[in-house]
Length: 150
Length: 266
Image 1: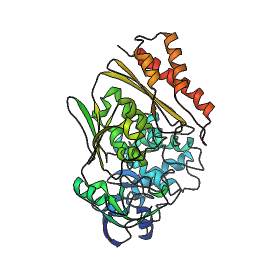
Image 2 (image 1 turned 60 degrees about the vertical axis):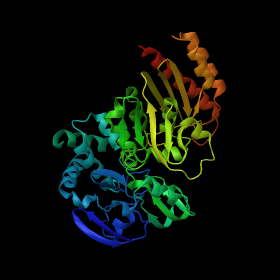
Image 3 (image 1 turned 180 degrees about the vertical axis):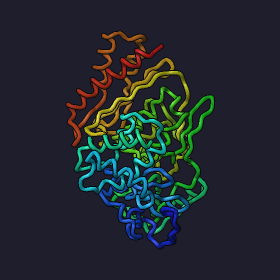
Image 4 (image 1 turned 135 degrees about the vertical axis):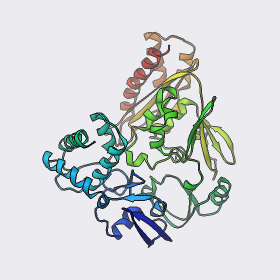
């Protein structure tokens, strides 16, 4: 089927099977920041935004995104770089694989939550797993980011 | 799940007729697509039916079957209903990303044994509205295997004054529950549902009958109610816990829930 997608404010016309996931399609279109992790919604690594809401791209059907605004980390480079500065300062990143999905979830959280508590931040982000960091440094970086930039 | 084609009906009647066809399977939120290793011919996408809203009247709250769990979590209507028990229960399901996708209808139609939401809805005495079959209690639906290909439209919960609790234990925040339990007082009656046993949620009839015959339960009545609960609810083993562990857990979670309800009775 033919699908018309708005990705990071640019229009793409593609041909894809109806059961194609947004993860597969986005990577085929060159958005390599979108990573394949568990491929079953459990890890959050494939997170992208659809109309500003974080969703697991591994199971989000590509055709359903027609008429909606898709955001990958390539579309929020300034915000992602700013968050990366905080991650660097706190040593919150190791392999970096979880970073794109996490950055998008933080971006969505910043828009959605006003003056969140630490508990609210942890709750919002608990669907984004990280195998490397042990979460403490990540959380400290994000608290500080939200305090200063939120 | 793999499918060759997809249809996107715009009306409930159209969706219902499509679902009657051989090889046509409903797709709701799609959160479980990768867990299902099957090939179907045609997916019937329910996203375009307009059954994804939450509303209320003087008598009831209504939740459209395609409402996602995040909508439930953030709904002002549901936050103000029964001390926000439904948002509280769904907020502990997976992460925000999955809650933006998974729907209440998909949860119910799957009769998922581990579901936190089904346990709460059972305790609340929710009704399900199907296109062909009409209204049926969730209690009857969960036991009824012969539903066929009907289309769930909305969930109704009648309003009555009361207080609700929900308890669950998981090994990690993203895991399925080892067990969950919902204890409520609705009007003059206690309602108790136990889920993730690991089987589908059940109402604790004998326990409810005992408590409903003993208003203002004191510690001895609460203790006796716990013993009745453990005697009537069957538990089992699975990867997340043993029968013995679940029985111990049920006792603790039930006591917490019941004490909280009793403390908030006025």
